[in-house]
Length: 441
Ligand code: UGA
View (tube, rainbow, N blue to C red):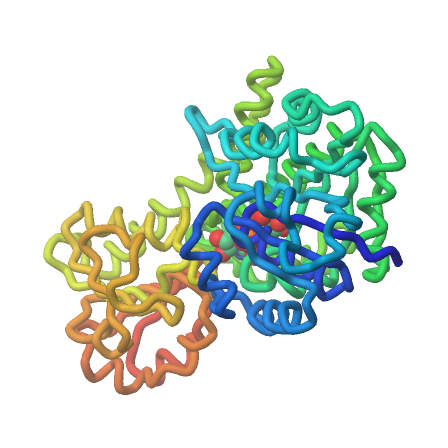
C-alpha cells in the first residue's frame, strides 16, 4: 500500500473519523477546520463528539506523528508540516472535502461550504493532486468543483462515506463497500488504493453515479423505515405483532433483518436532509418521485402517532400533564440532537400543554439544542417523579436497567409509552406499569 500525504478539510463526524482512520491505516494526515477552538481542543486530545474508539485513534495517530490538526484549509494544503523539514519534497497528494452540506432553502443541499473551500484552495493545490468529495453532495458537484478549481491537473473524485454516528470508526474500518467515482480512472484508482488494507468490495465508477449512490442508499433506508413504521400501524389495527412480522420478513436475504425496527420516526443529520434533497434534485430534473414524498409524509405522521399514544395514556388530554421523557438524542450511542425525532415528539407534547422533564445518558443538564420548555435532568428518577406518563424516545440500553420498581413508587400514573419497543413489558408490568409500544400489544 502506498502511504499518501492527505489533507482533510472539516473535522465534523465524517472529517474527524476519516482523518483518524486514514492515519490508522498508515497515511500521513493533516486535518483542518475553521473553528480554532475546536482545533486547539483536538491538539490537546479532546474529542468534541461522542464516538466510540475515536479518542484512542486520534491519540495514537498524533503520538505516531501521522495525524496533525491545523486551523484553516490554507495551512493544511500550503503548509501541512511546518515542523517537518521534508514537507517541501512531499506535498499533499489527496485533499478530502468533509465540510457540512446542510439543508438549504426548499430542502436542497446547501453547497456554500464546499464552494468556499474550493475557491480558497484552488491556487494552493500542489500539481496533480486529487480532491475528494466525501460530503453528501448533489449529482454534478464533482464536475462543479472541478470547474470552480479551474485546474486541469487536479482531478475531483466522489467518494461518499457510509458511516453511522455512534459506530463511525467501526463502520469506516469495516465498510460494506467503498465507492469511488471519477471521470479520470487514474485518480479513482489512487483514492481506492488509500483503503486497500480494508479489503472491502470497491466500486469504481463515474462521478455522477458515485454521488447518486449515497442519496440512493440513504433514501432507501429512510423508505425502508417508513415502510416499517406504516406496517407497525397496520399491525396495531389488525392485532398482529410487528416484531414477529419484521423477523419473518428479515429472514428473506433480499430484505435482511437490519433497519426494520419501528420507532418515533427516523431522524438525525443525514436521512431527513438527504431525503429532502433528493426530492428537490428529482423535481429540478423534472421527475416526480412519489415514493420519497410518501416516505417523508409517513415519517411526519409517525411523530404525531406517538403524541396520540402519550395523550391517550394520560387520559385524553396533555394539558398540564407531567411527562417524563427517556431519551432526546436521535438514536442511542450519540450526543447528537440534530433533527432528533425525540425533540419533534417533545415539541408536539409541549404544544399541547405538557410539562416535560427529560433524562438522556448522552445529554447533560443545560445541553444546548434542546427544545424550549424541556427540563433536562441527570437523574432518571427526577424524570419519573410525579409523571403522568413516562415516554421512551431513544433506544439507550441503559433504560432497560433502570430501577423500574423505584420509578413506579415516584410516578403519579404508572404508564410507559415505549416508542422504541425497548423495554421488557413483563418487567414493566411486574413493577406495576402499564406498557404501550409501537406495532404490538
Ligand atoms: C445514516 C446512514 O445509516 C449511514 O449509512 C450514512 O453514512 C449516514 O446516515 C450519513 O449519511 O452520514 P446515521 O444518520 O448515523 O446514519 O443514523 P442511522 O443509524 O442510519 O439512523 C437514522 C435514524 O433511523 C435514527 O433516527 C434511528 O433511530 C432510526 N432507525 C434506524 C430506526 O428507527 N429503526 C432502525 O431499525 C434503524
